[in-house]
Amino acid sequence: MSQSRDPIDVELPEHLVPYLLSRAFSSFNRAWMEHLREHGVTIARWQVLAILSEYDGARIGQLADMSATAQAVTSRVVDQMERDGLVERRPVADDGRAVEVWLTERGQRTFGTLLPEANELVGQALRGIDQKTAHHLMQGLATLITNLAGTAAVPAGVQR
Image (cartoon, rainbow, N blue to C red; front, side, top):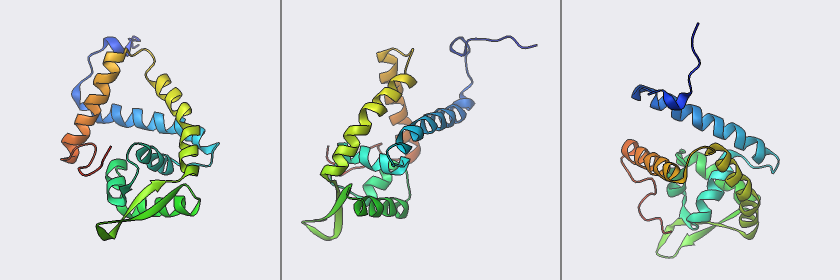
């Protein structure tokens, strides 16, 4: 018979980091998908909306990097979002081959509608974690992404 222990009081071995990250990611996405479905938005579309809310005018490759998605997949998502009036592509002035992706007013409204729900879910996920620890968690995750990707969590050339 095993004793129930508070997970906070247990020292977890480092080899569980990938498992714990995967479990947290899956739990968060599952909960978030329930909210998004009510608005006809997918996780992929939410990622583009959220990225463009901070980095409006990003290029497809930058969006793909920041969302950790293949460029072809990101391009298809942007195609659908453009068709639905959430984003628009604009040519880059100094590079005729490149295009930037910008939120439309409808895209901004959609993001603005979903953001309070996203913040509420983040608050739920961080319940019981003090602000300093939450900040360290975010810094640690950004460092983890950088270490594994070999690049910064935000690609170079993306203006904030």
